[in-house]
Image (cartoon, rainbow, N blue to C red; front, side):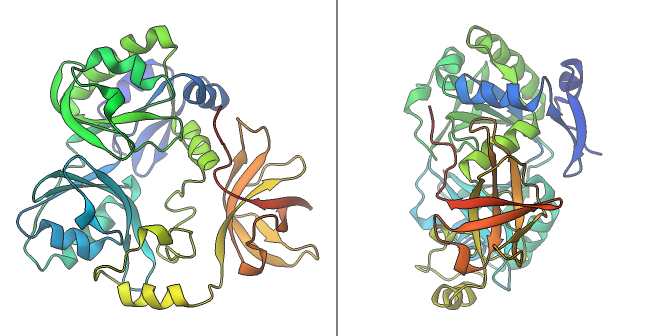
Length: 361
């Protein structure tokens, strides 16, 4: 089991540690609902150092990024980031990721922890253009400081105006006494804030200063359980649940990150898919009665006939109702469609809704 540079810190704070993507990670400290509300209303900090970081460099760096990702990275300028996915040879999804343009001829790819080895092998297999690849995953730490008060609470820690970092933008600058860290705003919670990329040996100093600066704002450490409820309220896909090697970006509602202005792995396959009627679609739903939908539960029609499966589900701490994502036949994918979630012996009525579930304060 791998650990992050902050593992001892989490244990000292009373975190419940669980295995996740090969790492020992804090799943919660005080409790999911308390931590969830902290991020929605003030500021919380996550250790997400298990995420993977690949540096792609050289004159052919963009060529490789373009070849292995579905979005158009040529549109990136220095200081901009882009959500994308890595399609496999069959039109499924190897991973979803964020691409940062750090310098001319230098791109940072941030990938899911559980897919680091798989992604590295896949991208390497496509690197016939001679781009330089470096896997920095074991050397770098990542903190996500999230919530409506995050920027205000952290401004004293940087000489840069953190309020000026727009969504999916980043800077390389000083933070908490450390130079040359990446400060980015690509949050996974829907409540604002930013992420700090730094070296493992720097993260403890940053964590301590973040907790100190955040004290007047009620900052708390947040575990992965609340990260999951926060992202689900926004309808953000989680790799391994809502998307995987067998799902296409179009089925998953991610057609907006597939750009046919260039050629990339499976671009012809996906172009054909775009023209076809899909066999299934990922939808968001809210339960109309009390109940908690869970991953793997059957989705059925009014006659009890299976029409799909729940991929993510929870009791929404903000909405106080059961919410979820799941794949269904396109016949049941329109907003307002009535579906039923099989919770044990009972088929609970639900309604297909538009994302996000959580609309803000």
